[in-house]
Length: 480
Figure 1 (tube, rainbow, N blue to C red):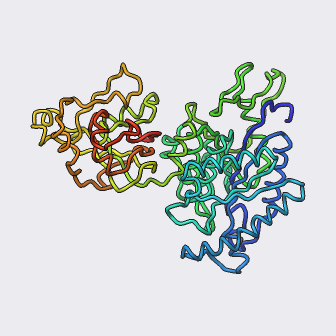
Figure 2: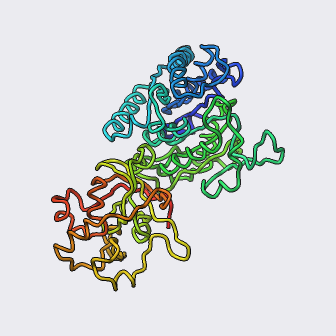
Figure 3: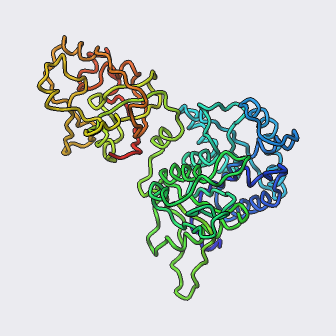
């Protein structure tokens, strides 16, 4: 195997609670944990860098306190996590120590990486640990997490970690060996899906609400969400059984042999070439395919900053855009930048630099969502026109969002003041649909002042203009 791998991989392996402790007795599943440790050490010996995302702190805490089930209160869960986390990392350290493999504990919350500086510090810590030959063991810091800063489950945490370190593979170890059309425990006709190219398309073909243990917080649905995050960041994601972690090496070898063409290495999101194999000998038998489901990585992955904005930040409010801006922002060449001309309104109060949802108005019956009646607007006096001008997308100009301009340009100073001071109509979250996320360059009150205006008016309205864009680093998730 060592001769086949020409370039080492960065690998993230996620192990759920049901794979770490017994669902009923809460005893650690030592055979599974030992197999995982041996697999990780074997991967390290082949030159791969490995990060382990481990659940189980609350489950271990339950055993220590001889409790039958998880408490319902947040404080109860946090207390058990505090009790169990130390014992869990000690267990990992003992097992890895038997094979002389150093480890490090990394506890994260979404709040820890919501600040860009702290996020980069976490990335640098991961890089340094991996360069030292250490295996970082990551878990959510449940002791201090609240709903606003929780990742929600460790499937999501593993996907965000994969994105942070530009991993090549994310392995989600669970109690089944892949994604099935229905619950394989109950349906003998359930079929395994081997390759998923579109997660949106596959949702209607599979059952995701029947799997998961009483101790865990996930299930197959959370794995689809994690796969969506990771593949969008360029990480090949694989679901396989935690009973056979040794298959990880075989799976990597199998995909290398399937994907590699002589003289044509695959490109990854970080710009380096992915692991390739030497041109195969026609007499060499085809490698067997270990049981698993693979989610193929996006060929146009999000760059780091957009991935950070989309998946690690808790949005503080919403910016409502019209359909023209939505259409343009959906194009990759837009650069993910929004001018005030494309803004219809805001919801909530937020500061500059905070993450915001990008939303459109829900489609009214018989009309296009977010598109006002142009004739009525342009025939009305300026004082009575709606405050979002009609937008025109000029395809011949690069940076498509920057090309959106209001039709009416001759606005007097008095009219301009009236234009910006008009109160936005009452709009609630129920009236809009989230289509993406971005980072606000101005606070909510300032964006309200300049919504619908040409960028040249921003200094006059705000007294300054640090940027002509009101929101940047936008990732559109829902196309027009």
